[in-house]
Image (cartoon, rainbow, N blue to C red; front, side):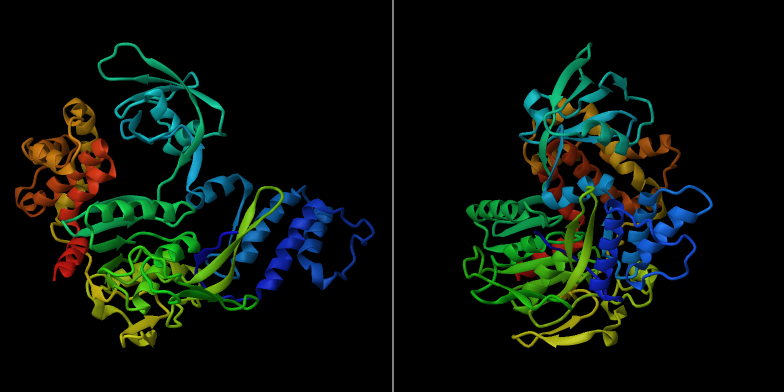
Length: 532
């Protein structure tokens, strides 16, 4: 059984909480007593919740649904524990597990609804749509004989129509540029991989870059594939990007950390009220135990991301660059109920090798807990590390003598502020239009753009197309008037974003990231740091 990470102190004994939840669930399936006096004022304290539910069902003025009451009671109980112990209704369980399992069942396309039409951005390699010959740029007009174009259908509903059990068939009719008639396809749904490695590529002759977006059951294999390919290209130094990665499966983070550490070095340990200390140590069989290593983090890095970053930092193995991470240091265990619903219950805290828990406080309530990032922003912590309240954090020392902090996320060794260069009122107005323009441009020019296989060659071509002026005209048609002084401030950044998003529509992430790199001040800092 896989264990996921979250965060937060246990306000009530977990054993009691589990007992209460089990009691509620048993109330659904066990016969109820009929010999309890209807108006008795004496009830068993050990089964108070179930007795209350039965009393309501027996005596309440209006008819009630016992199951609905149970579904409402369980989240209320878990809310008294911590922000990350959660109940998942049966209808939501499959979707909740998809990011952790690393796959879902469907037809295997990435799509966009920007023009109120299902526009295929790409087909997933090896998926059923790719095998049948669907192409980027195809527009799905009908799904199972229902017109879906121009109907204002939400992306969520579209996903519901296209996803489905493996082996079932969905019929679509598509419009393809250059063809007069619609093309019919009968697509047999299958398991579709969800990749947690966005991209791996060489940023220069010696330095590799791997972007990990989540930690799932497939993440380690994906990571090792990328690492092997980069080493074959001559990689001597490595940057791992965990920014925006909110975590997932702890084991994946441990396996990746193992690739960098010497035998028996501590990676992480966990312990809880009923859980004895459990350690994870390096096997000494890592593929990158020597060589310069940088981990990028920010305020969106949490849970398993913090385990990986903490293991590298506490063992003095690499340098952490970016901004303070989220601070989510709790371990959750999944629990499955017979009706298909489930629960993720916090059973332990995890600790980095120096013994620090990076879990941020939540004693002031859940609202304050989730508002913490806004609080950090308002006190300018994203712009200046001096705004961090270090006095409220616990100090620890690494074997190399470095001071690290617990109780509020992972502190980077090298701070890089949030970049607002190029921001202007004009940019803020047109920002939502940038991807829309790029999508339309890629769709119109797909025949010309498809000949490019390398992002740098595609970028050279796009540099000659006057994209910025085209975009300014496009934005004006969308009621955003040109502002020459502000465009002078923001124009270069807008141009790079346009090229990056167009490249993503043609070459996927391997086209996007090498161009976006020009705007990524944290990544550029890391590259320069490794050069020196």
